[in-house]
Length: 125
Length: 304
Image 1 (tube, chains in turn green, purple):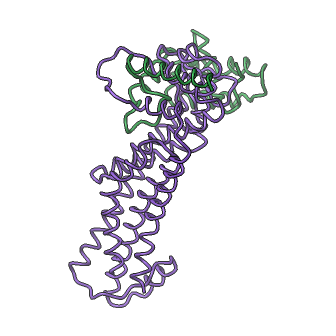
Image 2 (image 1 turned 90 degrees about the vertical axis):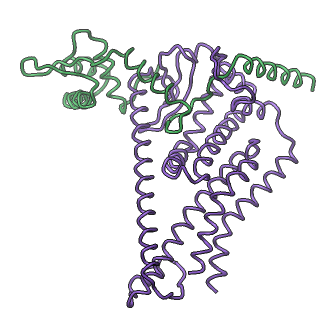
Image 3 (image 1 turned 120 degrees about the vertical axis):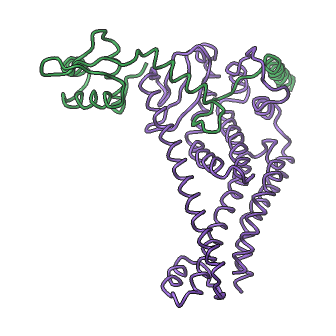
């Protein structure tokens, strides 16, 4: 597994938000991240603000600062994304194309046979 | 004015005749990149001749109005041929105005449609990057899902999504081949081409060329990406990856007969003879040249 790059700061911060059941404050995230990399408090603040604007987190005032919670669990969001991808797959308005669409059992068997026969030809040559 | 009429005639001819001819030329998947070029030449040819014809009509229509030299100079700077002024009729002016309004309307609608697709794509890529587990390959993210799948979306930055089920099914070399296929889409800017073609198809769906071009180019670009992946990792690993990721599923409603996957797999496993490929290349090149040259020749002949 690779460390997320700087461009994926929102992902890093979301990881922390998802990791804490009782929500996070900017200070908490900043303190966790500052051990691993050089980061400014205001950067964490604006990242959480962006995530709030995009609907990824909700927040409640707690004293002088906000406490942030994820609006959906990671699993819920993943399921939504995959559902969107699978529903869109193959439609003309889709912005993605699967490596392959699905095929029938018969067709799969035929292709496997074709792959096998091409390998035996190769060996004979 | 004659040039404009002939150009419109060319546009109509290509719009209705190119789909059946190009489908036959490109359906086998020989020289997929050249085949994509043939379709794009037809699409661009129609759009450009339409724009030039409308401009010529406009110039002549406005020229018929009491002297408007400024406009003529502007158009000459753009390299548009000077035409003999035709007497202006209110009817002609009306037709020209209608043509301009329709063209601008279509242009705006296509532009909006492209921007819509683009922002949807960017949002999907962004979400995938936030949710997925990054891997040691650039832009590749692992997403938790029961169904095996791999796809890529353009964004800032792009995302290549592989589901956990896909990774479990594929061997190392198969996964390499699948990811090389997705990288070829990104490197070749295939999504950007398809977004424009799909926006055109959505806006001008009643003109046969545009919807047919969007579908055909979509299929051909898959073959282009297959070829790139097969060159690096071998066709056998790629086809094995296809079989793993495509099912089988026990779903009804899947068509009988050769599906897109079977066509793609067969052309990888049984490479065509060199002579066939060469003949096809010649034919496709001639088609592209004819499509591109016709409007230029029309312009030259009518100008002199």
